[in-house]
Image (cartoon, rainbow, N blue to C red):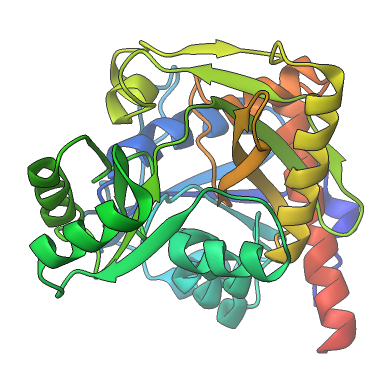
Length: 349
């Protein structure tokens, strides 16, 4: 095993892995650009893109960098990328085949340190239905929900869900992020259409009650010893915090820190830690919650193990306000990746 710890802060070879085959490919390319721009002042940065068809390639890093990196360039085999001594991988591939444990499994087999959660935590957090089951098992508060199969008759699922949860409803593919495939339905016919849309992205569907609450997000950092940011609030520019709000129109307002009572802020941070530990996260995660003032209080919505790192992404913004700059955050994540790698090697040499 390479003695990684002594390399952090010198010229660690940091592979920024981006792109991917999911619907969140474009988001990943933007996240990767900004991480690479900051990281290359401290690390030897290598950008590796995965095309929409699954080809791995070495991406160019011109100076200055464009607004986004492109997943194109000379083809390269994963084994070649990970073979160099002192390599740490920073996966920035959102969604299926990147954030769901599949890529993390490859990195485990390659025996290379990587930023973020391991196989199990990544898989559980990517599948929102499984996240709900685990949080429920640990007694963590969340909104009422149902799951369904994409192969079930949409009309029957809609009828049952409306009878159980009422209207309006939110319908989501269980394994997707960035609000891709998510719909808000106010009628039975809209619910059917929402189920059909979600079924285009996944075989497991999640149907949730509409919560009349504020959207609160908390950033968590660490392996065993955790750091928790101040909570922030998303004020959507549309009916809900959708893909356009997040990455295209900048219509949503990000309020950091969230203007909520101190007791609610404390509850949000404590719940974020509880969810992080229950789902066995490591490295980083953004925990999304709903806040029903005067009602049920804080409710866990979902946990994102590879949150966005674009200029308008909440995860780095929360840390900046909490006293950790973007460069410091990247360096800390690399340290955590190496710490986890060395710890696991002590248990499994």
